[in-house]
Image 1 (cartoon, rainbow, N blue to C red):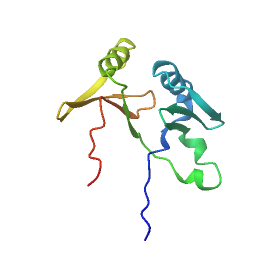
Image 2 (cartoon, rainbow, N blue to C red; image 1 turned 120 degrees about the vertical axis):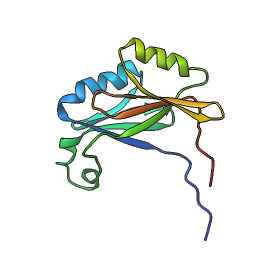
Image 3 (cartoon, rainbow, N blue to C red; image 1 turned 180 degrees about the vertical axis):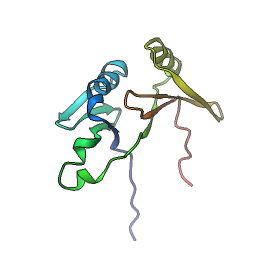
Length: 137
């Protein structure tokens, strides 16, 4: 068998209720400063480094035909974002100044750390100061 490799995560999807779209778009676009790169009736895509964060209206997504209707959650999801070099504390200060509650801090050993907070739809977001996951098993 020929060796194969995957080189990254292209998309991560999170979900919100229909009434949360405006708040969610403001949160990710204005507060987090992510550029919106596409939008459609039931969602919006924001660029995050080399990947894309998709935010879907949970109820409208389930009304779609085809394979896209087959993904989604009935509750909140999670995504971890990595802060750029030396910007970890600045991100924390920026979010706290905007009234975002930091709900948990983690020390991952070896100096790696992250903090957690919720978006307006209840998704649990995390900002990490580095890639603390092993490169391979």
